[in-house]
Length: 325
Image (tube, rainbow, N blue to C red):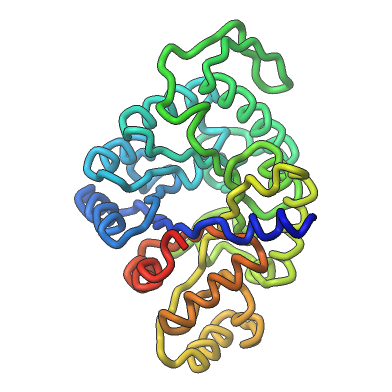
């Protein structure tokens, strides 16, 4: 990769997002979280897409957009197999219009086998699910760009369809595709606007917290560096135009960084050096965490950082320090 392009990547402006669990039955709590995120200077407010204990993602995002002014809203992420791509494209266009061009589409191949089983949806192999996602991305992008689409793939067939309603953002809202495996990240590198990184899951359902479903070895610096390289290779010349995203597992803002590193290392069965060197843990005072984020942007080209709702206040001073830099 030429040095000129490397410098361009490393200097993409930083932005920050909040991911809500969306598990409260009181919608006013969710709305207050979004309004607080906007007040604190976060760029995006994101909702996951799970069945059973959450408000419907699209409807909730529409209400949140109506109650905020500058905050961007997004899915993190829609499970592709739960919606036909034509219907999802229509909802994306609607959300973008209703939000005044503030919607971001996060789309994934689906991973939670227990949800598929509960809904009676066949849980295909990862390869098949990623193939379906690839076809969906083609369909959604074409329809949102205003094309009259005829498409014949392995999983979807479209005959001369166009959407009268078009999104405000052209040719379509930013599209985030994320994951942990090479096939999915390579697809994201070729087709998405934003590539998201997360450790691979090791269980088929969410327990008390999403973090409990993750393989922490896959969150360490060597694994992340390998994933970045997969994306760089698959993206080719378009790598410099991609925004790279990461969801942080924990934020601990403290004046006793070494002590906190030791506690986190013990809790996760890792070494202090492993915890200190991975972007998935942000530990230290405001200036120390700020320096970490700038270093990680230089090292990995990651500029878009998302934290769970419970870390929104902890990271807020860092957001104020670094936003837009």
